[in-house]
Length: 337
Image (cartoon, rainbow, N blue to C red; front, side):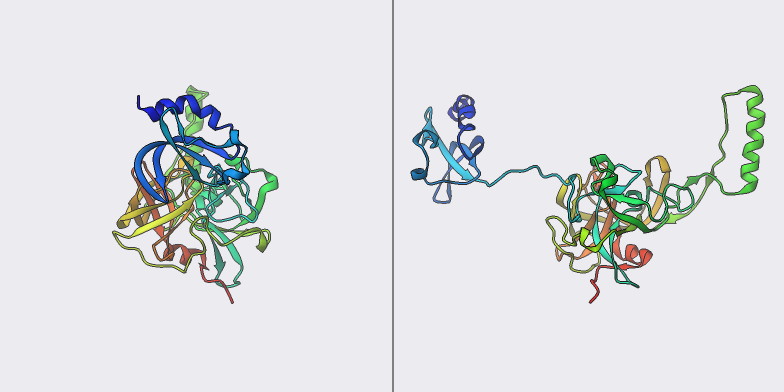
């Protein structure tokens, strides 16, 4: 065991009791802003205070048990949570339809006809993965910030579902009267022999989707802010190409970057209990998101929005092109004058 680690084990509890000290660890000694490369006990403080203003017993010693010490000012350290309540609500934070867990408030967009500000995210975040006919949501439904999973309550309603692009699932309950009648007849026969059994008829649909997208109307314009956490206000929209570096700011994993690997992809995506859906014209990036990050907008290095994140796996993330999103929802990123 080296001298620094040995000294840390003994001195850490005492050092953490000193004023301003919030952490200790093993680092390297820096002098005049230059790293010497010499191992040291590194003491993290919220603010460096001149020795003259400290009591002698509150000063970090120059060395402890033959190990040098170094002091680094780091400011106040807080949890990097996007799951808390923000007012005004900010893009990059937790949000969700009152029936779902939680996703991400992607960005503020504007209605192309009225100019009113709207909240952009996924259908599966703001509209409960609805196909528009299944009763999973209704226009005017409450939208919570933070989402229900993050302890959002009825007191946290910041918006109402305004518009959404229906998602067509591969397999759905049929809306055909003949199929419904056939299902009822079969179940009458089955229940003669197995009272606790029933049969359900499903329809297979060969319909592709372009986007997983929805917008909500804030209860008041001043309850939202258009600056995305860590990324700022988007600078319009842009195209996307293989090899582009892109970033997102999401509820679960915060802000990180990835690289576009595939464009114009057709992908089958699991929508949870709603079923599976096929999406076309999708973009695939290196892994940059986890569940709960859905709804984040994806920006290029020019801070232009290029997509809306909607899905992923342990190795990749997937977003739909923002041009398709804006066209389908009738919105723009250009603030009205």
